Each structure stands twice: as C-alpha cells, then as structure tokens.
Amino acid sequence: MVARHMVLALFLVTAIACRGGNAHVQTAPWIQSEAGRKVQIFVLPPGYRGPVMVIYDQVDGARPRSVDGEVVYDVPADGIVRTALPEEVLAGARVQFVFGSRPALFQYHNCTAMRLQGLATDPAAVCWLAIQVGETGTPDHAVYIVTDWVGIPDNYERGARMLDSLFFGGKGISRFKWAEPKKPSTQMTT
Image 1 (spheres, helix red, strand yellow):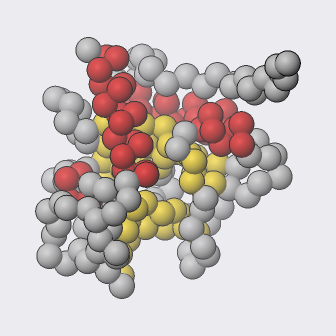
Image 2: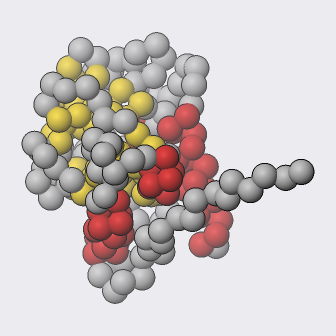
C-alpha cells in the first residue's frame, strides 16, 4: 500500500512539474490561465531557506491574491501555507517561488537531482520533496525545499521533520530521509 502511494506521489510530482499543453481542470472564476495553465506564485520571506508546505482545502486557510491572472500566496516565516482552495482547483498549475519582484527560482524535480546537477556556488533554488493527494485522513499537500546547494541535506531533513510533525504525530516515522547521492560512474566501455 505504501509503495502504491509512493508511485502515485511520484507520478503526480512528474505530471504537475512536466505537464505540457492545455490543462482541462475546473477553476475558480477569478483564476485565469496563461497559455492554458494556471500559475501559482509563492512569495518567500527575504532570504528564506527551508521547507515550504502547501496544505490544501483548509477551512480557515488563506485565499490567494489574484495578480494579473496569477494565484499569489505570501509564504509565512514558518513555511506553512494553508489554503482554502482544494488541490483540484490548482491541479496542473505551474508553480513558481520568488523573493519579492526577483525572477522565479530555478526548480529541480527532486533534491537528489539538485545535489547531482548543481554546484556549491549556485544561488538558491527549489527541489520537490513530496506531494500527496487523495489519501484518507491526511489533507492534500505538497512540500518543496527552498535551499542553496550546500544546505540541501539540512533543509531536506527539516522538510521531513515538518511532514512528520504535521501528519504523523512527530514520531519520526517520515519515510523521507536524506542520503547523499552517488555520482554516476563515468566508466568507458571498449
């Protein structure tokens, strides 16, 4: 059962991150789309590093601002965005993270890819930790990690602890544990 949910989560991460073409989803009337895709922008506190968790369909959750047809959230200092919107409204949306009016941060599909492809001198970027939708008893949510290359291990672990404390009672049972990836070998064959 856990493996099935992991496969579903991986599929959803890939689908949301890489989906091209027109998105055919129900939208709130005030959310416009750009070239068939909605855009969610998360405005980070200055210098923020760490996990950003978006929890959907919360009764007292924030209503995003609509700015030029884009869905805009201000990320609080604790990194937890509780939104009144259900995940289905924003399914397939392009997600961007920004510091004020600066360009959007570069995104990696996962933190392992960021670690293998990035450099210690790279600026902050975003890597994906988890997306869970449709699980009984746990609200739909997504967890992103805002970090520089050097901070990946610590910020990844902070994200895993955040997941554990919010959804698993802080018992340390999160299935997410950082492991330093091994670089692919560059052996030549003859």
